[in-house]
Image (cartoon, rainbow, N blue to C red):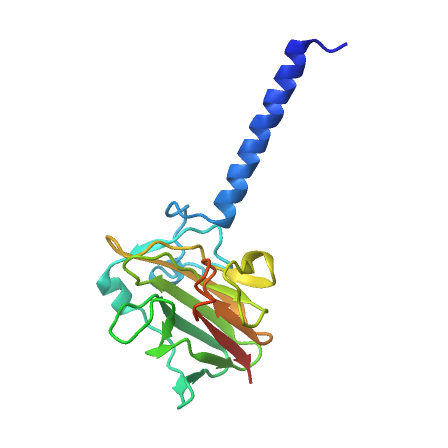
Length: 209
């Protein structure tokens, strides 16, 4: 027969393990605590490799001058808020939560367009440099195969997502920035995974020519 002391020891170990696993899972899904290592923008500033996915890569803080120095691809824009990119590869600067007059905090701005449709030839290698320029709200960017409408508690990380940044904090001493890279192989949407943001209109479409 197992003694009571041994039983309590086993129960205590089981509870401790459950707590540790729970904390680890929460940190993975919603890492709101700051950079978690590495330099996600090394490919932009230091000729390092671009990061793929981004969930565990942390983010960098950029100054205004660093943000202004990012070189993005030059797409062709049309009157329907659509940006069309050429073959090969594309580097795209995505601003989240702009606070300029006439813009909604629940939006992405790319090449001065709000939530534009992005059109690529199939097989294009895309790198998105994603920057939170909001002054008081968290934002992130997730690529998903699910189309709108989105509910308030839509969870793209568990429902058909291809890649995602972390949820990044608003502007403070700098702009939180992270990048993701992916190959365009079909239509999808880019959305903000924060509860209520996609529902409020913070999403856009990616299409294959």
